[in-house]
Length: 439
Image (cartoon, rainbow, N blue to C red; front, side):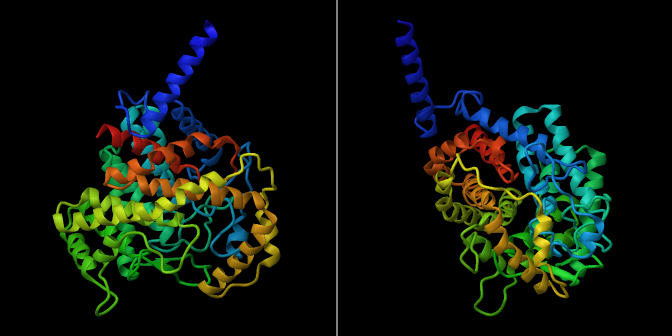
């Protein structure tokens, strides 16, 4: 009899879970929503804070299971090793990851209102402000620092700087900042933004960099349009200074030339790369800017454009979700922690292109000598980040269409077995699913 009862309970549980995943049953409480999946998200959360947040409150790229990793020495950064961008090291994406992870922690706090979650958000903000303090040029945002705690990689990028703005804005917009924090954050954001205005929105580098700048916010493509519009709109929102509003309006209407789409139209079209990319995870840094623009905008014309761009981006990203099914949970291939092996392909770099060329050569070798890396980044990172883009769609029908697939993905991954930290957006995905059902 007990066996029969257990079987019935199990059947009812799975019917209930599947029904919710397919949107066929009402949601009563957050604790009920997707039952088991909450445990997975909590595991992911704990792994990030246990292994991947360093002593500077910066989210690193990869670490061993005990949280250990090889941090570059100051001389290595100055000598541009393994390359001027610090690509393929654990310190490659600190400002990008901190800024983007604040999206998750701010949303987590909105659900829990726990002081512990507010403190975690505060730590990430401290990390971002720290990364803006170590450069030797105004407007420089560091990726991380060397073992001396003050020397950064030579080059940042638009992918590092725009999430820096986004994370700080999200923290203030979510209502977590007290008056003193808000003043400090807005002052620093204003300083960096004004510096970028002076460079024509080009991203400054360190004095020992092989080039003065590393790409720009002002490009007339997906890599630029959402960024410059978000920063100018956010600065007007935070400061109330009309000059930022004027810069924002002007930037929306600018184009690369006659018969070319202006920035507003580029945003309306959504995530689109000039060259086909099998991995489009970096597109998230543009989509979150689009989301923020949509949230802040009150003019129906502009808001509609951003909404269309978000929905279009979601539909484009959705094709990447199913990649999670190709992840081999039994994979035991080698993961190379010692990035210094890549120095055998190092050579002097005298320009931005030199740095990119060296990094490209190293990458072609890295995929051979660290096969586990390929497994995690292609079949874990990509579907999680594409799911995040889908959950940012204002059109709930798009989210509902991929709801069950996303839940299945979240519930399948074992987050304590990953070397890379790039599963952190699974929290944003989950919290948006929960909040979307409540709103």
